[in-house]
Length: 512
Image (cartoon, rainbow, N blue to C red; front, side, top):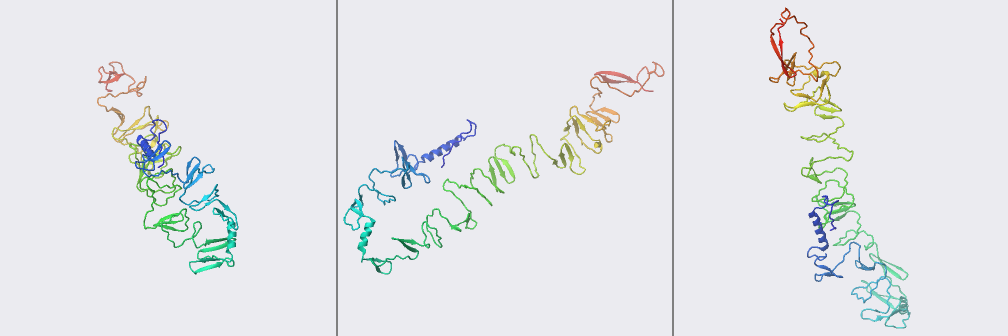
């Protein structure tokens, strides 16, 4: 297991680090990696102790192993131990200062220098090597050189035979003085002589450890193959390996890659998946760049966003689902979008034409998109209002031709005006049949103004110091009192009105 690092966050108590349980779990895992669980013999637990300058194993007859990874070695001072090889780490000579005893084979690939003598097993002690063609000293402790041995043998083999025998052919001999002993090759064996050297080689029909050969129809039982190069299709159990393709031979069988223990399957290079990829369990990835169409059957959870079927939802409780473009980018919805009772908070900017059923909104205009279609603005309920803001509301002259506002109210904003579209034009409010034009609780019908508020006064008022001006006179002259054209002494009746809030009485007379 690799070392686990505790995330302590960016600043103190900023909430971005590991929770306490996660942090202490990583600490426990690191201690188990270092010390091991109870009973482990390969970790620094209760079975292995460092006491003073000693590393001690408390388990009886257990080895203490120092195992580097890969091609690494163990270095003690300047001595390197890598596998079964001991070498000098600083390229100086290695000196063994004590007696050396080996129970196996001693192979010396370089020159060997012996300061005194050489003793082999229980035989004689070799004290030197002599170069004597006739072996005159006849020493029991000296070895002869190759040239001395050759010269001595040459002098002895004259007129002597060399007896030999093969697997067949019986006993044979070669007269060393006059005949040539020939070693001929056989099946898979070639021989070649050069100078004083006879070389026996296997030919191209025999497989060698280092050569390149083609094996046909061979069965290898439990072999160990290192760094093999295989050409063509290779079949291993139910798997076929051909070029860069691995295929299962079993009908409809899955191809499975399984790691050992807690290991994982890692795809180190660029990976292309054509077809359907099924992942059961947890898939942990670094940054992934994918190209092409991705089809996910089932549910896909990405952080706190869930994608399933044709729905995108959030997994976090009461969290908003946000679609955000980068910097100046926009969220571009290419196809028709249907919403069910959605609430939009904040400003919505729409460039181009907005079509809602048979209504189109483009620029600063609202239009009916169906042929000869009307536009209805209807408030909800009898108490609802239609409010038109702005200082000026322009109504075209054709508004009177069949325009219907339904049984609702039209509320103009503060200081709003209803003005004709052209100069000197009238504003005509017209009813149908016996209907009246009702302004608040006052109705105007023909030449009659009536208040509809029960028992309320009908008030005519002006702004500021303005007066109520009746432009049409009804009587220009009045005769003297008691005369023929004079007013009667007693009026026909009285009109009760309020002037500036005070009730007044005005007498009136019959014209006759």
